[in-house]
Image (cartoon, rainbow, N blue to C red; front, side):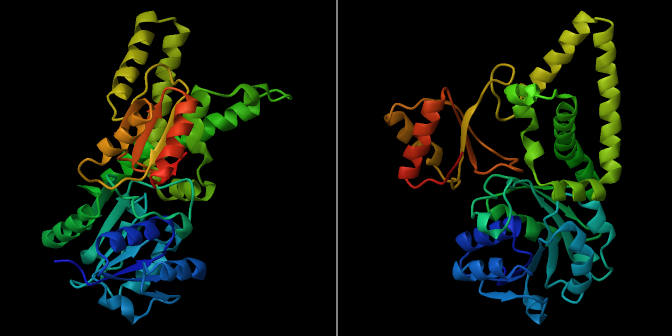
Length: 363
């Protein structure tokens, strides 16, 4: 059974996107929101995404079946205390943070049996409600971390609701979640930023490295352009797991250093071959050692024939697609569909053509 009313505490990029998605799929569900950013609330009301807005957590939230906590990490404890009065069998509390241990450990006793941690693995380098999209969850992984002892029926109900929004749900405990995300998300961002800072430190006075930086360097460091505030908070809230992964990476790097220092030819080949094989097994791959990629991202509803229709539009105009696929883990990427082309001219033509057909395209 669908909920009658859903509340949001925070209406930024993720909260706004979830609200827009719910409004698109279930326009009869009443959505209300609390945010200190009155501009976001005003815009959401003007778009009819929410029916009521609040600058205080009032009793209206007690009638919500679900309350999505989408505030900055450092504000969570404060809001959890206020939400204690609303939690119960009739009201499930969830969050959308990329680190789960801190919020689970901070749960008040009254909320614990009715809390499901959530991490939609999607997002953008942009922030704020103005950049929210009703397709951000489409085919994206959405990890759920229910509190220990929570009734299975409540977990199943919420999981089915999130899946109905177009996301791919996964359920795990919060400790496992934080170790997994530290490995595949947090550590890569730290490495990317470390590499950028290293190159900046060792560059010469004329910034030769900066001028010629391309290919592999730009590809591997793209995510270093993400929000410094957000990554500061992630490092502070997932310290244990991040440090564990950094130590493991340092050990791995030392092993590789030793292989290079002793000219271990076969071992070095195996090192790179193994990495290539694993990387090529991921959903979206590109041939060669990180060549220049001519790519775009596009919003698309998950419906039969959707990709075929888009491909037909491009092929009928003589535009060849090199690679196409759905992005399941879209943290810091816009769009559901990823497309690669063989040259820049084809990419530009595809952008112009798809926009003529009213597709939302991100370059």
